[in-house]
Image 1 (cartoon, one colour):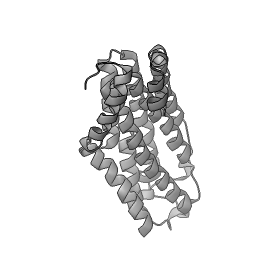
Image 2 (tube, helix red, strand yellow; image 1 turned 135 degrees about the horizontal axis):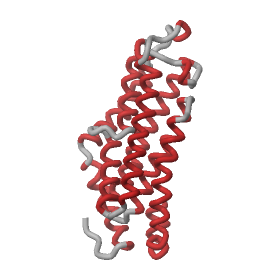
Image 3 (cartoon, helix red, strand yellow; image 1 turned 180 degrees about the vertical axis):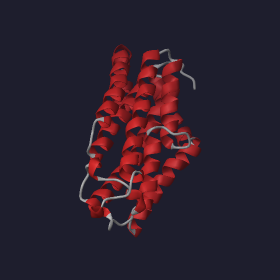
Image 4 (tube, one colour; image 1 turned 90 degrees about the vertical axis):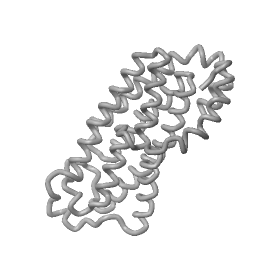
Length: 237
């Protein structure tokens, strides 16, 4: 909505405000990541990580370049899939354990191996591991910011990705890969048949878009170039 309606509809305003939008996006990435790192509730970690990832979208939009816009739209799709997977997994864990407090969990991989694998996959995409959709979107946006001369924006974005790696890996280890679960959680069960279907579709999509990004970037590029031509006359890919 911001890119297709707000920016395209008001091109002069876009050029006037885009430095502010980029600066706020950079702050947003860092602020969301720091907030997520300080959470002890699993659901809140996912929520605040979404704030940080949406900053990547606005950062790409603020570059006013084809690569930046392609990365921004790619991030919307990648984040939608990743967050859907995250919240599905959080729901499964909460339904079994009846708690979202990370401090009370531990070693769940021994009783929920499938959930542990998909949660780890979502975390790896969140931190931008190559081969996942999260890497493609963040790399393209940060590269666009760098090439357009916005060094501070780029540094902030990369630092946000670094902080993301800290809190998602820390949470994954604490919940699934640490010492075995306490006696209260020995009876936890893995994902059910219907849950497996959702997890497999979402997880496979993250990997497929990470390995073959052109599957999504090619149709995105058609739309972004059309809209950018109204903001930046003569723009080329």
